[in-house]
Amino acid sequence: MLIAIAGLVGTVIRQFPAAALHDPALYAEQVAEMHRRWDAIAFLGLPIGPAMVDVFETLGFFRVFSAPWFLLLITILVVAIICCTLDRTPRLWRGVHVVNVQQPASFFDPRLSDRAVMEHATLAPDALAHVFRRRRFKVRQAVSEDGTVTWVYGDRNQYFKMATLLTHLGLILFLGGGAVTVAAGFETILFVAEGQTAPVRPVGTPDNLLVKNIDFEAPRRPDGSPADFWTDLAVYQNGEEVARKVIRVNDPLTVDGFRFHQNTFGPGADIEIRDARDQLVWTGSVILGGFFADTFPQGFITIPGSDVGLVMLLNRFDDGAGMLVLQGVGPPDKTGQASTAFLPVAVGIGGTTDPDATAGYAITWLRSSAWTGLVIKKDPGELVIWAAFACLIGGLSLTFYFPRRRIWARIEGDRIGFAMLGDRYVDVPRELRGLMDDLAVRGGARAASRP
Image 1 (cartoon, rainbow, N blue to C red):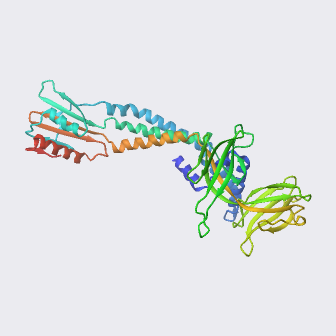
Image 2: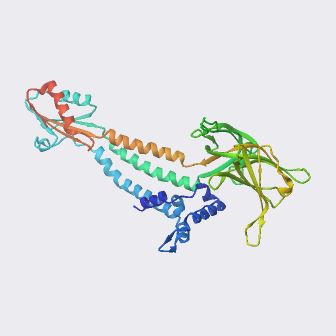
Image 3: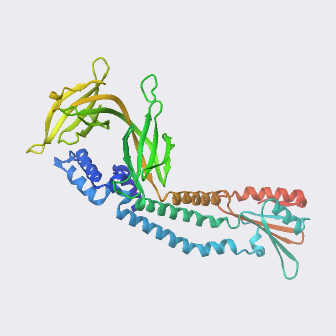
């Protein structure tokens, strides 16, 4: 019940992305974002939003499935399943392995359910056993000490009841695989502009992987909506290209356990910045991954060698041509607010700003471009999860589709009594009727009592 409640909390409350759990700066950004969303919440005039964010963050409600208390609950559940399985296994084994072929006459009383009797039958024990085998029963026979009574016993799917242990194992592996993923897994999101590279792990990580966006394409339909999008992606390690592939949604690139998934895309702007001496300061593609007023793509870079930040916003002129709006941001003032280095200036593709209007820098919008958004994952628990899936589905399939059936026949003279037992998924009366019809044709049609 506690795990179910925790799962509900983790479903209702927005969870922080996995990348934030390994990056303190990104985690702080996520907490700040939750404050922005929730701080306005009030109850009876009291502002409870800030306290809610702080309490939920402390309790781990924004990262439920990796919180220590949730992992403790999972551990307790795994231990409980293991103990239950160990306790049940000996009784389960005895139930399927120990077979009593000889049953007393009262066991075949036709007044009991799922019983039948054939009077004046001419079926021999071997003929009866042959019919049982045709119906895929494993047959055993026994004879009384005085030789007057013969028992024929059929057992079908005798050991498939043990498949419940396979289901239990699947549950344990599922939980264990999830724990491995949380403890040792890795996930991050990268935005990479065309022609640019980005490290997968923090800079300085040994044998780090580097991704390069060789090319990005997003063909459009006549109405302007994207028909598809893909990235020609290269991966480097220690200065050498180790893999390259055109990736699409649901067609990732896998390298050294990492999977590179195509996830999203957006516009970019290739710009060139020159100083007052016409020396090249910087050139490259800027990712416009944010939004201004939830409408206009926006990006930011700091001009190298200066304390001027460059805010870029993508818009359109009245004639529909592309417009890049540039504004300079200086160091914070005494109040902590960013100062204005220069006021907004608009340029078109191929246009260059007047250095006098842009803090002495000539900024040229060379061309429009695009960036690709990649979700990069390494899940060491994946194989465990697949094994769990196989065990769980296999155990359930064997349990539901191959239930156990048992049939006893007691032959005494020309009278044969039948008793049939089956798991709850078996229509025992119907199967016993079918068996009696088959036997009647072979030698008991003149007198048969139906179940």
